[in-house]
Image 1: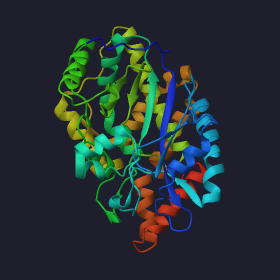
Image 2: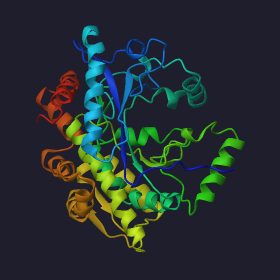
Image 3: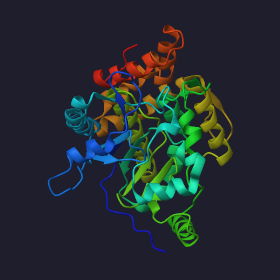
Image 4: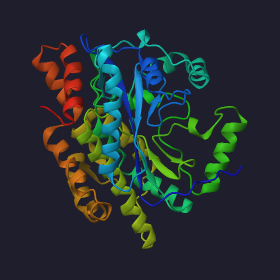
Length: 379
């Protein structure tokens, strides 16, 4: 089959942010997404262009437009959150984000009544019903289809860095899992999810897609749920590694890091230089290490097996990406990655709130709500 790749401007950025709808009084999840989406729809029923439905009725997805600068995408997200809050406020519903809710029970959640989601649940059964998880997707524009797969392999080399910085799912069903990102390992249980296969050229991706369509594994390429994937419809590389991010400042820092990674290695390709390309076994190990240990993970950096503490290597990475950030106008946002290192990732803050309250996880949910309002970490 032929898989067209849309025209896109180089290193443009778009952000998708999955948000939980929680009760203002209890902190538990509320199944009111349909009410919110209906209230935001146009008179003719057309859905809001920047507030989308998701698998579960406790979730809405806020989507930015396509921008050159991360800050402009952030302004989009802030405006659309304000629009949603105009609806949720009178319902006594708050917005919250983390990779998982601290104490909500998966079997109490309702699935959006849509054929796509019903088919997914029917096929995946127990695992599909447990997908009480939230993530962030960052799209970066790629101007030449030939660049997409080399850039995907290069960004995969930094999988653990992105996952550790964004890790925010230590709790599941009111229990501490021992992981920084429990979401990462849960989501990969779905068919077509997890790390992408190694593909050398675009024709390999077309062959894979054709095989999946022919055998009924997918009905559309959007059902390929890799942690990083090409997005042919938008002409982007879509980075789906990150846990749901509780604050706008952290979200924009991680988005800037993602955008700069793609821009830096796009320039390296133009200069004819080799890009990072880790063996699949190292990629898989880095995913597990960063999910388990978060900011304390020791990651494998290259094909020789050299290792380094993730925070140490992130600081090296920030220096390497500084020229790309200057070109893209996101130096301030990229600098905020250092604040995550020094202040702690969300999973660390959540555990500290739980510790201060004797293991009670309701205050953890309320702390995430407060951080969403503040737009920055509060510990």
